[in-house]
Length: 587
Image (cartoon, rainbow, N blue to C red):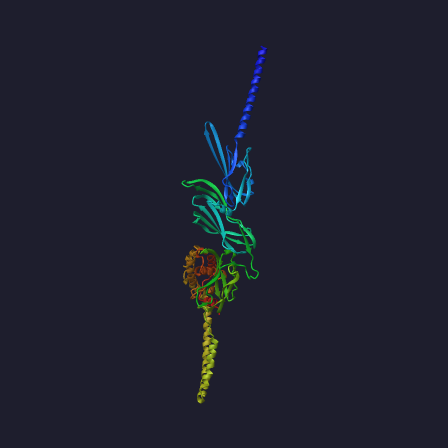
């Protein structure tokens, strides 16, 4: 009995050990099969490759892998690395499942030469290194290898470029007729010390090159370099996805593309030593002016608008010089804010500065509007030139509102002096009779003078006593009979709505209503503060000046000044009119 139990235990232990060995062998076999099953390969779609053109690096595995399983940083030294896309396929056949994973990365060689794409290791599996030969575009053309479906070319507008000079950098993307761009991005060029700005919109066209039709996309940049010497323009680069159609078939799968234009090396010229003035380089500079209103003479206090326009070719508006003018002291000057614009005409890009001055002459006589001269360097003739405006003289006459003061003293003296000259012409008895008659009449007139003088003094005293009692009643009567301020609500509404034309018309009518004793009021003749005068002049300049932006005029500042003027202006009585006229028409 005991022997049978021992025999049973030995059989049980042997069976347990056998199961353990079988399980371990099975796990080892499965692990070996798994490691042996993972295989990866690397390949490129073309070799040699053209500098600045993209090619495809493809990593294929027979199992499921992720794009994060491999490190592409080792490629950055010699290549531009684009995005990596992953594509997985699975199939089941005869009870066996097959997985295929493809990692696709777009690369672009930075320089010509021989390079090696290193081996990549994923989960113990390793690819083989790939030797790549990078050739220039010229070499590819000579070998007939540069038959690309997408290309990128650049050029500049000037061969000789000076420091601070703006030139045009044009980039053109060529897409073959059998190629369709699904998406893409065109980066802008970069410079070390300068400004790069895109101008205009992209232009689409078509062109036939070597018998092949290409669709073109052209984009322009304005570049200004601020440092003389040798410099480099890092080129534009196109990154996108395209699909190519084969003959007789529709467009195929989408392929990522990176393509880069050629790098440009420039020698920027310095400013000439003999140049005088503020540096401005261009091939066209023009100064023009306009006077509004244009007439032979102007009244004292009448507003004159002088508009000066500076137009410069191939210069950014931020580089335009300041227009410094020394004005005479015989006029008050109110300059407007300069207006800057850019525009293109017949392929040339212009910058323009428009500056308007409101001129109010305060003296009668000749007023000289000063000349203006701007130096500039003509990059075509390689000579310094000047854009000038000559001085202009206008005649200032007395205002129609001025009251001439007659010289009564001289008139009386003239009459007095004429009496003895007439008397000296008489002779003999006539002279004696005249002298006797003059003595008698002098005595009579003396008494009459005393009597009338006494009556006049009595009248003055009586009038002074009565005036003090009736002054308040007279003031109230004048205030009550004044015209109602029915224009103000319309003017206030127009100013709040920023309606320049309506505000200008109503402002003139409101001035006439407020000061009816003035026949034709001008701004300079009205009793208002300098701030109110300046805001009124800005409205008139905006309305009647040339090249003014009426739509952007704001009426809030003028409304605030007119409210102060309206609240501070007392009712005008007849006794106040002479003093006001004296202020409006100083002698």
